Amino acid sequence: MSEFQRTFDSKVWKVVCAIPPGQVMGYGEVARAAGFPRYSRMVSRAMSRCPEALPWFRVVRSDRTLAFEEGSESYREQAQLLKQEGIRFEGKKIVEQPREDNLDRILWGPQDW
Figure 1 (cartoon, rainbow, N blue to C red):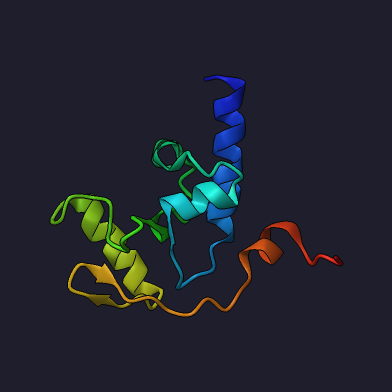
Figure 2: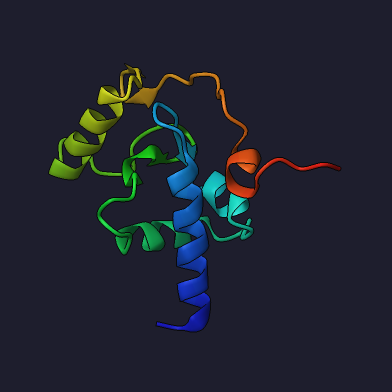
């Protein structure tokens, strides 16, 4: 694995760890928050290599649907984990809930600009 890939994965995983329970982010949102706005597809690869303890299930498609094939074991697992955190679905789509936490504050701490 290249140094870039290790750095990228590490930054992506840090963002994913900061997603509060009961909230989700799209792959593109994670890429932007990690500082790589054009690398949303690479976020998917980073997630496939993530440590088991990471809340991988909080990362979804930009249209707020699950990335796995409907009916697959991974799809059912992700849906179940999200539902346990209070995420609601309308059909296959996640019902957005207001974000209570500022992700920048979670990642970088309070800023005195």
